[in-house]
Length: 222
Picture: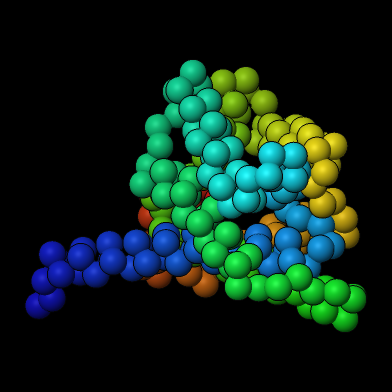
């Protein structure tokens, strides 16, 4: 007979692995989009714009913005988890580390494949991170908190936040382009696919309440 304690420990190890590998890959994927130069994901546009204005590295800007957003959880009564706090630091560190290793590319022959790689890797990272189920990222927690507070739909709240973020980032000098559009179109299907690939729940338990990602959890880890 298998030891329940051993199974529990193994499962926790797998969840932690999914969490931190997912966060590292998310930061790396964002860095690839920066190097490709064809446009960033919505929050990346804001981070890059702030980085351009302040001279602070984009990874550190990501950490600062994540911490500020996390503070906004207080008035809307959101509770952070391990994944929430880890997200604030791990994504930015991984992003700056990848930017230090990967040079800028020039010409569409290199930019297009790098953009595609960044988007797909972001989908992989999303599936890993969410499947760990250690709590939403600070930006998504803001979204779900506002959804609960205002009664507006997730779609409406998310759209309003990301439009505001993209416009602000663009005005600050962030990179908005075809890569941003491709990301917006592809990330949903990619995230859904990789959530199924990395699902840690038992096959016969996925329909039991509380064992699979809820609709509110199945969102990007930002």
